Image (cartoon, rainbow, N blue to C red; front, side):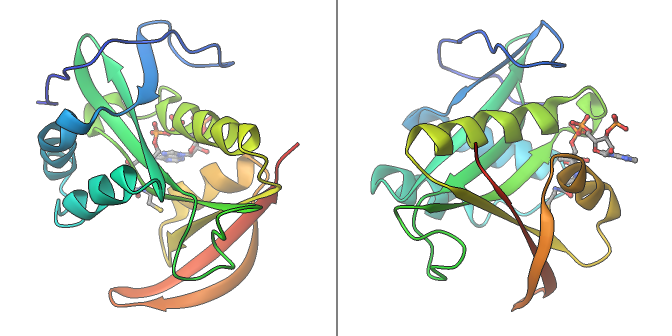
Length: 170
Ligand SMILES: CC(C)(COP(=O)(O)OP(=O)(O)OC[C@H]1O[C@@H](n2cnc3c(N)ncnc32)[C@H](O)[C@@H]1OP(=O)(O)O)[C@@H](O)C(=O)NCCC(=O)NCCS
């Protein structure tokens, strides 16, 4: 089951999100909850400690979706990445680590998390937002293309080929 979260909640004013879902930045003390969620989704939690270090350093924000007091989804938005074409600390930001608990999929939560971090990037003055999708992950790619992202390049990650997509922010 998804992990219980510790923090207070903020109502999300997005288009299609179910009313019982709340989106907000993660708290520092929620590292264990985010790790448990990733494992519950069948994904490694290896990168979570680094994600939280980056959050403390101001290099990224971690966002979470909660429902009924449980953490059911997460993603991060990187302000600064090693590849400045993805996130350069100023005009470009990069979405990564998007995952929704299998029980809660197809309810608009993945889209809602994207909208939330796109807005956060817009508030920081970013003009472009990028996202990576593993080759063959057609569901995720369909979600990104629905949101107006289009292909820009491939990168070779340690686990295989990743397609980079991007869109402009209003
Ligand atoms: C990709 C993922 C985050 C989507 O989360 P979600 O909350 O189910 O997404 P949403 O409900 O917002 O779906 C939005 C759109 O994505 C597409 N989509 C998502 N899951 C889909 C599926 N199983 N089959 C077909 N289309 C799908 C659809 O276009 C959908 O729009 P629709 O419901 O109007 O048809 C989720 O499936 C997941 O966690 N997958 C495993 C991790 C992963 O692949 N992350 C992406 C890394 S690049």
